[in-house]
Structure formats: structure tokens, C-alpha cells
Amino acid sequence: MIKKTLNNFSIKRINFILFFLMFFNYTLISISNNSIFLKYLIFILNIIYLIVFLVFNYFYTKEFEENKRNIKNLIKNDSDNNKILKINNIYSENKDTHNLFKSIIINKNILKKDYVDLEKILFKFTPEFYLEEIFKKGIDRVKVGITVEKFIHVMFLDIIGFTSITEKLSPERALLLLNIYFDWIIEIIRKHDWFVDKFLWDWILIVFTEHDSEKMIKASIEIQKYIKNFRISDIWKSITIWIGINSGNVIIWTVGSKERMEVTIIWDIVNTASRIENLTRKFKEKIIISESTYKCISNNKNFNTKYLWEKVLKWKRKKVRIYWVEEIINLDLE
Image 1 (tube, helix red, strand yellow):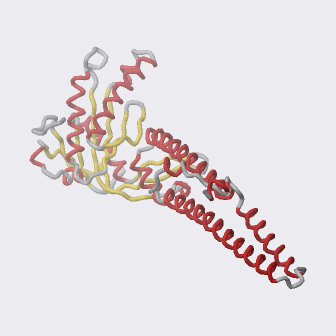
Image 2 (cartoon, helix red, strand yellow):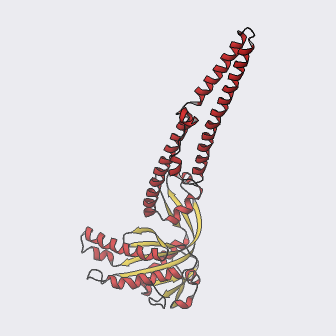
Image 3 (tube, helix red, strand yellow):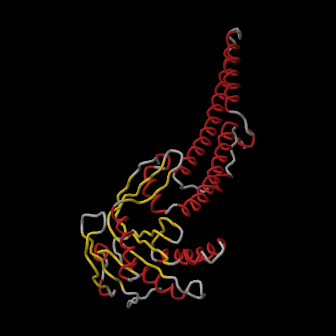
């Protein structure tokens, strides 16, 4: 009954009226000519005013605490938004607070949706693994020069002969064929928990983050297996894919300037992987891995590998031992 009677009253106005009435009663006492009846009446009225004051302020405080509790629940992501939005505040101050609270929920949901949509788009341009490492301290602290060291496997994948093929095609036709090829590559590497670092024409840099390199070898073999099925036209019959793989610690690095930056990986492991991919042409083997990658295979019996060569690469000081991986293995590639 009290809540219905209040009808969005202001607690400040109610308290002001009650204090004014109590003060007015005390002024009556001074001019009451010592009337006992009037004094008792004023005393009783002030008691009633005080009770009304306590009751009204109790309900106001109860509403306020309920709003405050809901805000805390929202911060903890432990709230039922639909239930909160239906709360009916009686006092105007609490009603204003609740309206502001509702707008926060609405804006939060909108911002959350916008963030999720933006995140989906962002992951299409920058690998999620990189962002998770770089954004650990918060997106607002991202700047040029952030470095994170991680152990990863790096694969360089190149189409041999694609440039000569594109000379016979229109740019639109060449790009269409390349996009079809990329779509298929992405499907395979995602199945094996890889991700693409970057595309550069027909050349791809792929990264794998698990220590065990077995999935990585399976993915590279599956790529070679599929490319045979991909040769469905005269255009693709001469296509050959060369794959070079290396493993070790790299630096995930934000490079660029304040106005334009990107996340990439650097270090000797990446450069050596590129050199190993170039060696596929020399040995005419489609998949070549480094010794560090070979040692990361959990079960070498699952793969038919062969030692190829050990030598110091150009511009390097240490020898690199490489292995050839046969295209066919006794493993389920699906």
C-alpha cells in the first residue's frame, strides 16, 4: 500500500516536508501558552512524523540496496538481465538510478555484440593465438615493440610454377584459382590446429603451436595428398607444392609505428624454415623437415622419414640437419 501511495515520490521532498512539519510543531509549542493538550498532540504528531520518516527511508534504502546489488551482479556477470529490467522502483531517485542501470545493460549488450563482431573480423586478419599473447595485459596497452617468446613449428608452403601459369590467365581467373586453393589449405590446417601467419601471392607461412609435431606432419602429407586431386584441369596438372618445416623458439612481435602496426613472428627459426623450403627444389622432395622438427614427433614409427643432408646454410654458422618425409604414411588423415 505504501509503495502504491508513493507513486515515484522523491525521498528528498518527503524528508523535507516531514522535517518542516516537525519544525512547525515545535514553533507551535512556543506559542501554545503552556497548553498540556496541545503539547501532547504535537508530541504525538512528531512521533508519527518520525515513524513515517523511518518507514519511507527504509523502503528507499531497500530499493537503493537492491539496485546496488544488481550492479555488483552485473559486474560479476552473475545476473539475470531480464529480471533486473523488470524491477519497479517507487522513489524517483531510485527510478533514475534504475533507468541509468538499464541503459548500462543495454549499452553493455550492444557493446558486447559489437566487440564479438569486431573480434570475428579481427581474427580473420590476425591469428587468435597472436592476439591472445599480445593482449594479455589489455588491449589498451598494445604498442609497437611488444615481444613474446614462444616455441612453435613453422611451415613454408610454396606453389612451384604458379607464376608461369598465371601468365596464361586473366588476373581475375588467376586470383579465383588461388582463392579456391587457399580455402582448401585453410580447411586442412584448421583441422590440424594450425593457423596462417600470412599470405604472399602463392606462398604461405603457417604456424603450429603444440610441442608434438605429429599433427603438423600429418597436415603437410594431407596437403600433398590433396594436391593430386586438385589437378582436375590442364591449368593445375603441372602444379607442385614444396613444403619446408622448422621448429624452435620465435619472437611474436608488434612491428610498425603508432599509426600502423601488425603482429608477426621473427627469429632464426623462421628464416631457416624458409631456407629449408628452398632446399626442396634441390633434392626434389616435396616435404623436408629440420632435425628439431624431427625430434618433436611423438612417434617416429608412424612416419616414413629419411635423413637427407647436413650442412651449413648460406649466411649461417651452424650446420642444419634435414629429413625427407614420404607422402604416404600409415595414419588416418581424416
